[in-house]
Length: 316
Image 1 (cartoon, rainbow, N blue to C red):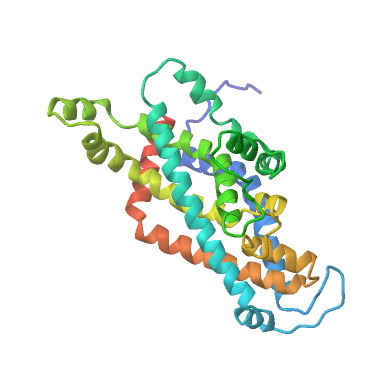
Image 2 (cartoon, helix red, strand yellow):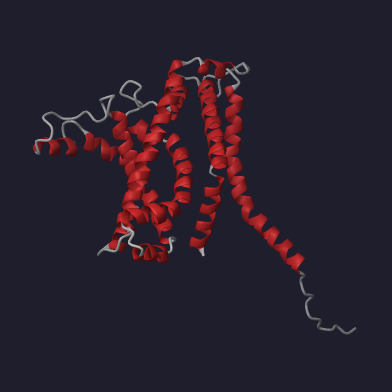
């Protein structure tokens, strides 16, 4: 029997697409499984627990339906924590965006050591939250903290400021510390967006006699608006879930002045021994964030499309 060497059959375009689709599915599948394991299953478990009277993990319980939810809506402390969470998110979002944009605009200008600054500005974002909390607690200390001692030696203050023990300024202090962590990351994003703005537009504006402010108003800001929109959503979700910095620095105090929803739910579950009520609060907060995200994306869908195109161009 003779065997002839036949050339391999040519694959059609449809075969290529089918193979690419299968390959894409295999590559995405681990990420999908991870999301199901880390996100979806805990949410389902949280919903189940919130419908019971369970106090601690492993204890006996009864099915009580929506009682935990009704109790929370009648809980003045929970409602107040929702308000504090909203203020926390708004303060962090506005302050971080303003500072990051200002730094990005300054760093984007040519100067000696520009590459060094661009490289190392991300360092605070890489510092673990625990280290950040310890560092700033020492710096804010009323007796030995470098901030108080320096300001008193310079004659700026006569007595030390209680940055973390004064209800009026504790939230501001935490906002500053949290911003110290996240501003570098936002700055890098803004720098990437600034790099996508065509230099020809600035040259044309300068020829027409436009100053720095007019260039920012008519060229820079419109090009950065899609990025600002995306960061507005991402920043809101990030800030709303901040727990580590608040808990390690003030534990929600003094009093309840810095008690946001994540802090309150942690305290309810592990110090109030009411995991079912804490789960209900977490689910309510999750639903609020989902509704906000859907509405925000719908109202700003054009900006999200433009941001996607910008990031695609940067990745080429």
